[in-house]
Amino acid sequence: SRRPQTKSPQARHSWKGTAPACTIGRLPCRPGREPEMSLGASSAFLRVVTEVGEADPKWRMLRSYILADGATPGTASGEAGQHPAAARCEAARRLINNHNDVLDDICNESDCKNIVGEALTQTELCRVPAAYRPQVDAMLRETARRLWGKNPSPEAFSLWQCLEETAEGVGVAEEEGRAVWRAVAVYLSGRLQTTPDQKSPSAALLEGHRTRLHYRPPAV
Image (cartoon, rainbow, N blue to C red; front, side):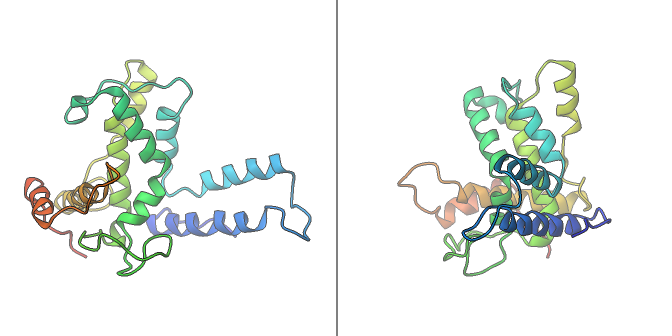
């Protein structure tokens, strides 16, 4: 397959969903078949093809900033600054390592199946239309960036600034972008499992989140 020449978010998502998937299904050795290449070579190949097919290269930059050996959280401000560095570090790294699943879950348009084909749960939560995937993706990156904070070294600080996302910076007007970001915040506030015995949030709790965020559903 040839990589699409367009840089539209839709084309990037299409490439991400098809190129790595078709090669991953072909490369591993199966009974009765000779391996396509050595284990080391196939591991290297799949890592790179997945990197190239990633929805947005900024995730790769975030990983280099946050997941590098010896990396430590920097100084955080706002809400992130109210939490210890260890908690912010865990949250940022979990989000980065699972962002594709989180994104798919937030934008899942099925009314009966989750992203792995099982019965949908927490149907009282409002997911975000898939048309807003780029805006949701940007919001997740900005969340990870703020959780991690800024480090004092010139190189790290420059990268931290470069990775900043804004609600109006992904092809939509500011008001529409903010509506999407609020929708994501409301959804995740009810979706995140924090204790083993946690129950689904009540309608009153969800409404409280919506009120604090001045929430209005984004237009489809």
